[in-house]
Length: 407
Image (cartoon, rainbow, N blue to C red; front, top):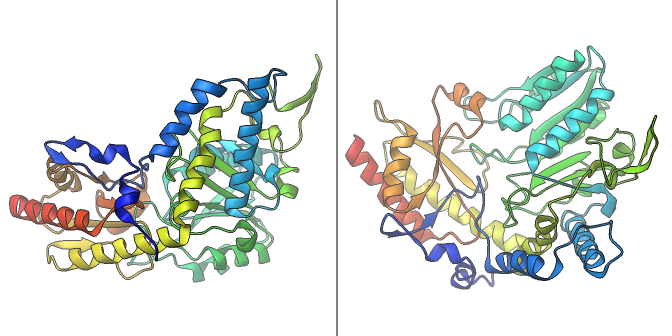
């Protein structure tokens, strides 16, 4: 594998800073990734040379900005192997993408219809469906977890009925890093006649995604977890399904004609993109994908899997540490706690922070998982392409210090 980690690290200016007198070790990438220099330069380049509204201007820089944003849409299409560029909807992130689908399904669902999600979801893939069910009279059902944090997919057969309209699940858990068997879930759901929505927020930075091969009806992810700016995201939906659904927001860009007593709507993708978009962020999405493609998503996947395996191995040597989902396939993150009386995950996080090590502590917007394990939260270390085994060794040293201080 041609993988020059020092060259990769040199592209992230923030890694040069210190935190609490120590070099920054950033292991909170599941929350948001750091940005490489080429992405930062692309942001500056847009505002210095191409700042104009898109799709609406006859003047040169408006047309240039429009071409740049549509080129980015095509880059995303190719990255996930969607069939058509108009199946790519720009959003503010995974949360908005899921809420968009939940909102427009209000026009489709009837009382008694059913939606199936799981106990391993981020709140953004639970709460919108609860709200939708409250408003439509539909019923929300859950695929449960076993004692190890594995989805009990075998129970999906009994959950699926002729009333099931949608099954929604994350590809990789943000809280545990566990990889879910979405191919099996998609096949079972389609056999029952239901649509499937995949939350790909935690998978898209770490592994190759082919939406046509997956046959997902919706695949949603954020840009800021894959080296693009915050406030960016993608909703992929199959053309035939998106055409059946009503608009999300009303306003400029999403219309065909507006009369005093009615309006007609634009075609895809603009039907779902009302108002001025996050132009700079959408354009720079292309640069973030270029960064990933230059390294190679397979190389990134292999490197990060080594980091997960190494972290698990080192943490397993500490008898005071409990690792969640330890025996399951995982990617991108390791979630653990200290089995010490009265010790909270945040206690560990604060000690690590004093050493310049940024991790995430708490329930990770996944409270049902934490209740399942009977814990308030976990310490989560999550990786990106720039992380190293040396950083993991320093994190392990910090955990050992926490054990000594808190034990």
